[in-house]
Amino acid sequence: MSGKRPSDSKSAGPVRKRNKIDLEQKMKIVKKYEGGQSLSSIARELDLATSTVKSILNDSARIKEHVKGSAPLKSTVIMKQRTGAIYEMEKLLTMWMEDQIQKRVPLSLMIIQAKAKSIFDDVKGKYSDPNVKFVASHGWFNRFKQRANFHNVKVNDEAASADTKAAEKYPEVLRKLIEECGYTAQQIFNVDETGLFWKKMPDRTYISKEEKTMPGFKAAKDRLTLLLGGNAAGDCKLKPLLVYHSENPHAFKGISKATLPVHFRSNRKAWITMALFEDWFINLFIPEVEKFCRENDIPFKIMLIVDNAPGHPAHLDDFHPNVKVVFLPPNTTSILQPMDQGVIANFKAYYLRRTFAQAVEATDREFGKTLRDFWKSYNIYQAIINIAKAWAEVTQVCLNAVWKKACPQFVHSFKGFEKDETYEEVADEIVKLAKQLELEVDVGDVDELIESHGAELSNEDLIELEAAKVKEQTEAEDEVEEVEEPRHFNTKEMALAFREIDSAMARFEKMDPNSSRFLRVNRGIDETLACYRQIYEEKKKATIKSSLDKFVRKVERPATSTSLQPSTSKAPSDDPDDVMSVSSSPSSSTN
Image (cartoon, rainbow, N blue to C red; front, side):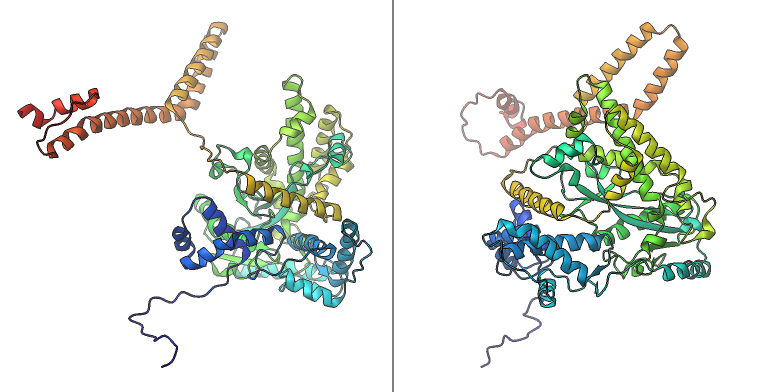
C-alpha cells in the first residue's frame, strides 16, 4: 500500500495554497499577537493555517533579532547571523542603495563599489582587527545582491545621466497621445515623491551647530516622504500622501489620523513602497479625481503621468478603465517631471517660512520662551499642519506653469521655473524672519536647505540612522503600549465651554459703546458655534435616554427573575433596590 493520502475530493477539505511568508509579515503577526489578538483570529485575518501562525510565534525571538540586524524584510528565509565590519558595512550600504532607488538615482557598479569601500573604512575601526582588508569585487557584489534581495535592481556599468535626447522628443509623443484620446488640461495629472526633513534648520544657525555636537539621533535627520500632485490646469491640487516611520507618534495622542489634512501612512523607513503607491492610486487618487470631475461637470476620463520609479507598479493601467497611466522615459525626470520643475521647491520654501513665522510668534507671545524651547517642542503634528498650509499656498499659476516642458500647449503664462519671482520673494521673507530670531541666514542658506532634502545620505548619516533605528526598536519592545482614548465631546465640558463663551461675550457687551457692532459679532459667533451646539443637544438627548433606559432595566430585571423563581422562602435583602423591586413585582402583589 502506498504512503500517499487518497485524493478524495469529497472527504478532503479545501487545499490551502502554499505561500512564502516574508519577515515583514512575520513581524506583523508577532505584533498582532503581542497586541492581544488571538492566534485563531490572526490566522483567519491573514488566511493562514493556525499551525503556521503558531510556528511563527514560537520563533518570534529569532525573527526580532533578524529584523534588528537589518535583514531585508522581503526575505523569506532566516539566515545565519553575520557579524563584523563587512556585515555592518553591508547594512549601511543596503540603506544607502534603497535611499538612492527611492530618489530614482541611477546606480552603477563603480559607484556602489566606491561607496562600499568608503563605508567600510569608516566602520572598521570599531572592530578588533582594524587592519582587515575589503575588496569590493564583482563576486562580493553578486553575493551581496543576493543577501540584500536586490535581484530586480538595475545596475549600470557606468553612471547614467539625464537623457536629454529622449526628453526633447517625448513632449511631441505625449501631445499626440493626448489629442488622440481627447484629454483636456483638467484631466491630466502628475504626482511625485519628495523627502522632507521636517525639523531641519539651515546649517549655519546655532541650533543646527548645537545639534551636531550632541550625542544620539539628530532631529534634523528625521525625515518623512510626501506624494504631491495636481492637474495641468492647476485647478485640482491633490490631498498630499505623507509616509512617516512611526505609525502612532506621541504627538498624535487623542487625534484621529483620519481627520489629518494629509493621507497619513507609515512604514519603517518612511518610504512610499509599491504597496503604498498602489493603495494610494486605488483608494485615494481615483475617488478624489472622480469627485473633482463630477463637481466640475467634466467627463471622468483621467491621464496620470508618473516617472518610472521602482515604487510605481507597471500594472497601474489595469485598475480602472477611466484612468490611463503614462510613464515618462527613463532618466528624464529631472527635465520633464512637472512637479520637479518648481512646485516642490516652492512648497518647501513655504513650509520653511511658516515654521520660522511660527517660531517668531511663539517667542514674541510667550514671555521667556526662547527659539531653543520652541524648536524642542515642535513636533510631527505641528509639522503636518504646516505642510498642509504650505501646500495650500502653492498657486494655480505655479501648478500650471510647471507643465511648460512636458505639455507646453496647456501653459497659459510662463515666468520661469526653479528661481521664479515667487520663490525669491519667499526666500527673502525667510531671511527677514531669521533675523528676527537672531539667526545667521542668507538666501544661499535657504537654497542649500531646500536642496538638502534630496541630497545623498553621507556615511555619518547612515551610521546615525542605523543607531536610531536599533534604539527605536529596543524602546518599542520595552515600552508598555498605552491605550489612548481618542478626543471626543462630552456634555459637561461642552456646557462649561458655552458658559465661558457667554461670559466673555457679556464682558464685551459691557465695554462696547457700539451695540450694532456687538450684535453683529455675537450673531457671527452664534452661527460659527451652531455645529457645536447641535452636537451638544444631540449628546444631551442621548445621555437622558441612556439614563432612562438604565433605570427601566434596573426596575424590570428583578421583577422578571422573581416571577420565574419557585415559591421558596427567600432571605431578606439589605439592598433597598431589591426590596423595592420585589414589592412592586406582580407575584409579590398577589401574595
